[in-house]
Length: 138
Image (tube, rainbow, N blue to C red; front, side):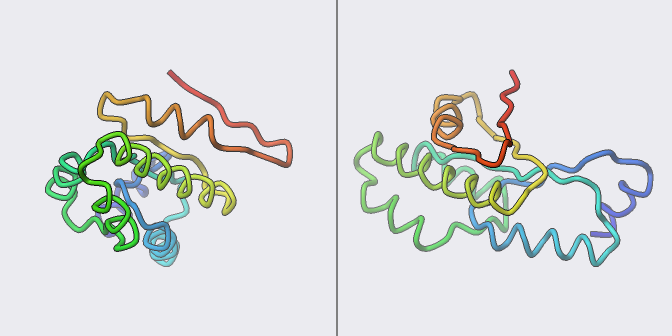
């Protein structure tokens, strides 16, 4: 947190979080940032799981990332069906995004790892109300 605060003090305009699969953890981290005096706009880092192997690789690369038991249970139930795993991963990420938007997150950054199809599916599934619009960037 001290390193992030130092970056903000040097003039960072925005922050992008590490990937996460548990929104409660993200909201807790945002609150801890606020306690540290960090109020810089923060984008939520979302990465749709597209395969079991990819999930294991993410776990290695993003030490400390929490994969909720509910998500793991869904994925491992269909671990021998790659299409089902990808649909579950995209569905989970879509649920996360809907919740983040409902809670007025400043923005969402998708970690696609060159697999943008899942992100496009998530984008298409989101319904925004109240005059808000999602903006797609390329």
